Structure formats: C-alpha cells, structure tokens
Image (cartoon, rainbow over the protein chains, first blue to last red):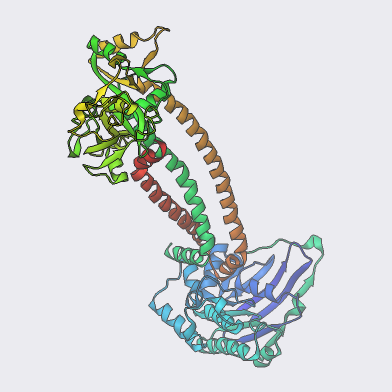
Length: 231
Length: 376
C-alpha cells in the first residue's frame, strides 16, 4: 500500500511544489498517474520511492513511514521494496544485458548475486525476447529492447511496488505493449502495487485506475520554498 | 568489494583507450624518476668501482678529468702524451707496481691499449680462450670486442692508420691470440697489446728484409708481424723518449702513495699525479647535482600530470553523473559508489605501478649494460 497524507513539498529554486491531503494506492493495485508536464508526476514518484523527502507530512509505503528513515535506510528500503523504471532507460553502457538486469545486486550490500538471481535474470530476459541478447551491450540494442532490459532490472529483486516513469514514452506501440505486459504480468503474479506515470493513451486505456495528479501541484511564493531533500 | 571491482573493471574495459592513456601517463610518472635513479646509481657504481681500483694515475698536465677518463675508462684518447722516462722515474723509487699505458689508436672503433702483462694481472683479466701476447703485433681482445666484431683466435685486426706511416705503408694488422672473459668494465671494450706494439703503430719501430735499405723497394715495411719476420723489427730513437699516454701506479702502501703524490707539485712538472677516485667523486657530485635538477623537473611535471589526471578523474565522474544518479535512485549507497570509483582509480594506479615496476626492474637488470653502452 502507498499512502501520502498532509504532504507538502517544494523545490528550492522554483516556486513549484506539491500539496497533498491524502493519496492512497492500495496494495496490489495498478494505477496510472496522469497530468500535464510540470505538474509534479515524477516528483511524486520520487517521494513515494524515498528518493526525496517532503517538507512535511507522511509517506507510507509497504507499511514503512519513509520520512522517519535516514538516507541509508531509505536506500535499503528502496532496493528491497521498490522497482524503478525510468523514461530514459538509464542502463549502464559498459555492462551487458544480463549484468544490467542484475545491477541492483551489485550496488547494495543487502543483496547477493547467487545462482537463483542469475537464473531469474535469464528467465526474465527470455520472457521479454532478450534471451539471445544477454551478452549484448545497450548500444547494440533498440530502444524497445533497452526499455525491456530496464523493466527486467526493476523487477529482478521482486519488489512489492513498481514505479514506472513514462516507461513507453520513447517506444513504438509494439514495444510499449511488451513493456506494459511485463509490468502487468509481474504485478498480477506477485500481487505487487504498480504505479505508472504516463501521457500515453494506450497506457491509460490498459490501466483503468487513472488518477490526475495535477491537482496536487501548488505554485508557491518563492519565500515559502524549502530545500531539495534528495536521498 | 568484489562487486565494486566487477563494475570498475567493466567500466575500464569499456573505456579501454581512456584507461590505457591514464595507465601510460601514470606509468611514465612513476617510471621516469625511478629509472633515472637506477641508471644514475649504476653509473655511479660503475665509475666508482673502476676509479677505486686505480689508486694513482700519472699523465700529462691538463684536464684531470680527461686524463682519468682516458687512462681509467679508455674514453677518447688524449692528444698530449708523456714519455717512457716517467715510467722509469717511478720504477726507480720502487714504491709500487708501475703500469704504462699507451692509448692513441683504435681498431674497428675499439681502443688499442698498449701496456704490460702486469695490467692484465692487476685487473684480474682472465683469458676465456687463447693465450697472452708473446711477440709484437699480437693482441688479446676484450669480451665485448670479440662479440661485437665476431673475432676468433687467429683473426687479423687492422688498426686505424697512423699518421706516422707513409702512404705506401699500410697499417699494421694485429693478430688475435686471446679473448678475455667478460668483467663488465671498460676492459671488455678494449684490445690489449704490448706497449712496444703501439710504438710500432706510432712508426717508431718497424720490420723489413734484413738486407734492404730503408726506403728501398726491397725494404717495404711488413704489415703483418709473424714469427718469421719478428726478428727484423727494430726501433729507432731513444726508448726514454717514446710516448706513453699515462702510467697506472699501485703503491705498496699509504706511505709510498704519499711520497709519490708529493713529487708532482712543482710548477715545472710536465706531468701530474692524481687519485682517480677523487676526480670521479668530483664529477659525480656534479652529476648528482644535475640529477637533482632533472628529478626536480620530472617531479614538477609529474605533479602537473597528476593534477591533470585528477581533473580527468573528476571530469569522468561528472560525465557519469546520470549513471551514478541512477544507481543512487535504485538504492546504491554512497559508500558503494565511492568504493567503485576508488577501485577504478586503484586499478589504474595498480596497473601503472605494475608496469612501471616491471620497467624499473628491467632497467635494474640491464642498467649496468645500458650504462656501459650509453654512458661509457
């Protein structure tokens, strides 16, 4: 479950911020957050993931109140509970497909690569048509293939929550469908909560539960603006 | 740590050209001053040990350094010479072993050293093959000369022309009768003959048919000295005035050394006596000073290069900002990122140090040879 309550957040440099009385995403729900550009959709995802912290209010995710955690604990929480898919894929160009999928295991001491993780990575890659491309580097992949690798990386640790930021923005219809299928299947199988931020009508058609988050956007006076609170 | 190593290794492998340039730069920074130290140390040892094994040197007045370089290291021959009289003068005092040297000629770019058998004994020069010189015109060659010129016992070695010979008198050919074992000193690069052979090279002695007149057709000079014609060789003039380049003196004891040193202070003296080790120490002091300047220069360049490399690393981190931000978003700790970057720098530095170490080791192994080939 994701729950944001009495939340206020603002960036230092701009008069932009978020004010949320209450936003709830029940556990196992698939939700699409929509809204015009610049209305704080990505910021909202970062708040839910604990990448940034609000000026005030609560962020509860998977039974954990994130604002009470320190940077390090939030990172550990993230690696254990949240899978992130970025609009620009954010793959490491010096690692091949299998190593990119296994990246979460290499960057946090709480996870260890074992045979199970390797097998799971191979299975995930095969499931999205990348079984023959495990040793290829991102530069040798198409846009769609890259986003599939990024999606596999997001779910390799079997997170309870998947947060996808415009996952289909750079993809054609076919590749967009494959990525959405992957996330959809994972969320269904694992009863995971899935939040997708998107402008894509195809996404909003597939995910019935759509929330317009533009109403949370608040144009603040500069003197009221707080600081960035990045993890 | 293993994961950091894995990521760092793949990053460097992917950016192999950048990594190679960094490694090459750091290798040079480490290698150059170290190699310079090693080479200079070898050169110092080389110069010092040779000078230390030559207690006193007597030779014509002039540059002390040139006299030592010529008489001890067989460097460029001196233009000035002294005469045999100086040898007799020291011998009469019976203060030690006196060894004359005549070094004015070369054969195939190797110095021809006219001396006595005492030289070979004193320097501990042993024959690897053949025998010592018995008659005029024979020579024993240093190990490197034999190697370089592919000489065997029985070969003939023409000596560069002497200005004393007339046009129709070709230069004398030396007969190789022995090859010395390698001792890693300038003796390896020399050709040793009896001092009378060098006087023959000077044109002070020659051989021709016994019945012939000097200058007659029948009286053509021999260019090869053999057992058949050696008896016809004879010298013209007083032996006391025959030229020598310098005299090595091995005094019996300290007192004998002091007595000998005291004899050459007069301003009327045409010769000087000196302790080669003192001359070499003075030279080395200058070399050390120059080395200090060079090392200071290299250190400065190294410092600038290190700063540049630091900047390169810093810029590469900046270029990787998006990548590192992604890692942080996924859940990578700051320490893991720092560890990965540190391992990456460590790998580059370790590779550079390894390569530099191998190079310095090679210089250490072959430094002595390099010094002899390049410096001497």
